[in-house]
Length: 241
Length: 241
DNA sequence: GTCATCATGTAAGCCGTTACATGATTGC
DNA sequence: GCAATCATGTAACGGCTTACATGATGAC
Image 1 (tube, rainbow over the protein chains, first blue to last red):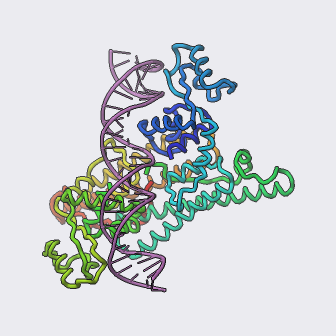
Image 2: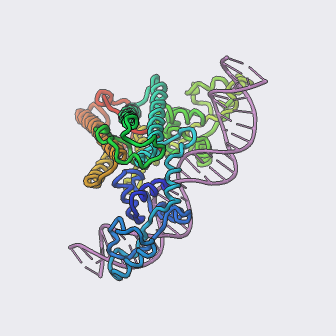
Image 3: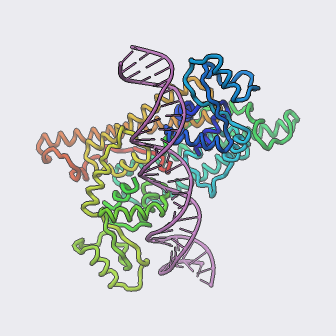
């Protein structure tokens, strides 16, 4: 889980531990405040597994997300940075870069359809946050699976709640939860619609010969026309729950 | 946490493990589907700690929530039940009853203000579900603490989200989460208002001499006139998160 | 000079899960 | 007779938290 989140962030750019934590918290709202005692060991595991490469860094130009050329190996880039400014910079922080193996693992993790569809909010949120790396069908399945799950819970709750006298506090809680779930479902419905609309556009384009052959993997999906279709879409919990 | 939930349910009536799980899931939506590998050991711990008393039951009248007189000790009630119908009934299931010590522990757990106010949704939900057992001031504090927390997260998220270009999926997630949090906050505001209104009624009543002296502990709070004040109040996530 | 923030890590422990094992009762 | 549900438990493990330990840098 945490591994998936880390790899997802590193897909975009190389980052150091502290920064990963910040992104997770502020940018995605997932893992509200992952602890270091959890984060650093996870990074070590990933490194041992060959999914990421750590480069010790001491230079000032550390802030630069893309190390300009990219042709320099991690080790060399670090050395160069150290030479450029020996004493300056934020102290030896380790910047992590995802490897080929890491990308492979990320794809596997992201696509893995957690046995029996028992997906919790966190896991779903995480996958959705990285949904752009998912092939369209998998993306749609993810959304539909989540929707089905929430819908089922809703009917179960309604059945159970029907004939039970709860005190005002418990009742308020249950009702609020139910409403939240309903909102979550209609949010998912909007996402699903947008997804379907996009899929049909692609098909139409492909039929008229404007686009290449039927795609099965991601990458083709980054600069599509979804932007217009996905408007006024919202919510989730974001806490560790 | 689980202990608190169990004790809370047992405050109301005696139950067996399987049933506790069901209540938690269907009635309160908390601990969506607590596993037995978690529930039974918890019950054992509580029993060892003297917080609950287990009575082995084999009789049919097991369904009866209140054992009519209440004067019979657990052991005797079980014996009586076994004698009444030797072979019938659901097989030896263990019905748990809360003890004095258990009530004391429950109160402590419920009131304990989890260091530094780092309260997650689950913990809050659980406490709210049993808020009727809390003295009014503690109840108010619980609501206000939670509100403050959500409000803070909201401002932080807004600050971080301001200048960040997220892809449509991540953005939709973040926006939806934000809206959910906003709704949670206004829900809490309604609860807080209701709580304050109730408090002032009590004070007014006390001043005119209609009620007894200023109460500090619960019990006095069960049949108040909140019912009218708490209307149209709702939501939460309810998942294990 | 000292405090806040940045930065990395280890050790112990909590709280939950899955998988396994068992068996009675009820309905088809 | 067989499957579903009710019912209780154990063992192993997963994943995250807290507390502890360390140290540099920048702002006041």
